[in-house]
Length: 196
Image (cartoon, rainbow, N blue to C red):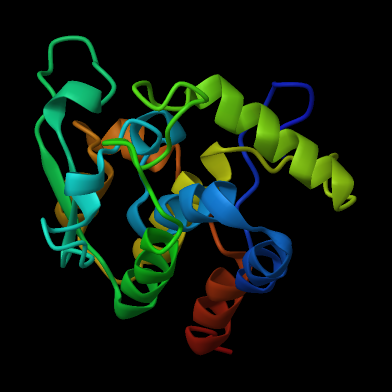
């Protein structure tokens, strides 16, 4: 059930929907969205990234984006661990283009005061305004859609343990809430195992 009025789960994006969104998105909102799609990071983590988490000291995109333990969500009884997520070549290319925007802050996504980072709430509000301007405001898409999309698409490629390492989940039960069942895959298996 898609998210409506803050209730329910964020919609998982079809690749065509994600591409259509990206085609209209620009600047830092586009980069936050891309990093979310490529890393399954929460937007609250993404907006706290520092330039050196994504770029080397020469300004070249790193092979990994580093999410320090200090910016990750705390969960009961678990101390956050630093996560490094490999950056695909397509994301490295986007990061290279974004780097060219004359960044003057230590933050990837500075606030109006460049000594501060953009807040997750401000990023979320921008995203909601963008979705509404594109006629997508009532589809259940939220900042968590990028995280759920990544986890759902990767569930067929990675073991649960590997996926938990990338998403930062500490238990399989918490990870499973992010995963969507693909009815097309179930149908294929049912056809393949039809014994009549």
